[in-house]
Length: 67
Image (cartoon, rainbow, N blue to C red; front, side):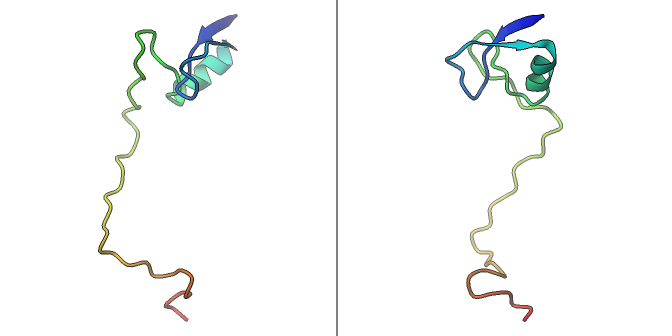
């Protein structure tokens, strides 16, 4: 059986997917709800890491500090 869905990657286009593809897209959180809003991220998603601008990198173009 095929379904017509919209994804978060191309919300303006309807695409036809079979049941397996639908379940995969749903599990990954890539389906757009019918009311025009994107679905909420899954509860198991980790929160974003805080950004610390004062922290300096330990490696880079100059190399590792371990050498």
